[in-house]
Image (cartoon, rainbow, N blue to C red; front, side, top):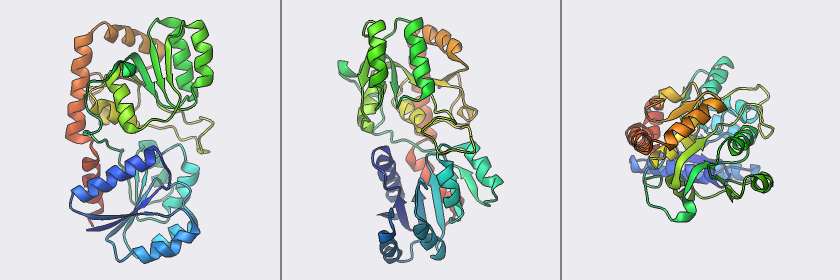
Length: 324
């Protein structure tokens, strides 16, 4: 099968996802040509590269110019978009959805919105992970921590770290761009208990921090975060891709409870959800004191990932739905 993969045009984690998705397509025996369609100048090139593919797969659906979308629609080729940032940028993704035959979204609340808007073929498809990269591995001391959070400082994450520093004596490792302004103040009052890597890190580096943490803190983004483009205020129901990555490392996770968690993992047996910061604190103390139980749960999460949550699984699901 010939598949034209139109990349998001973004760097960082987006390009990582797209390389892994292209690799999964090729591993499944399909020919995959990647193309970046970020400007009107690329529309002619896009038309040239069609060469009658069986499927056009558009990644992310963010800020795609209308001429590119119209080119896809007029091609007569089956088309799909995989919305990998839902529901946080639905101001941008909803207009793009009208141009494609199939919508795949990582979030169940976003799925409900696309269906309500009348699109006939909308499916929930979380991102997967690469268990060859995200895997259990010994790490050096620089990656070790009691509690680790990988991600940017959204307001609910800042609030949780502030609470933990006041309520506990644990050392916390923060990894992500934008934390420095908060960490300087925290360390003045918390005896230097906060470690910081104030940058976006490569996936293989993030895997090191997952492997080095006793507990990974996974706090999901809020619907009304100021960075969002989500005027409809759609609140995410599904878990983020970090959940799969950390689980693939056999890292123990405490995550805010999401309705979609139980559809992907056995909540309480493979990943531990918490209801609020007080419930989190109780569970944090318990699992810090029970190493063997913590390891048993984390190992179960990795087994689940290997059985159901790799990029190869996702590509199989996507193509099975489209039935190209």
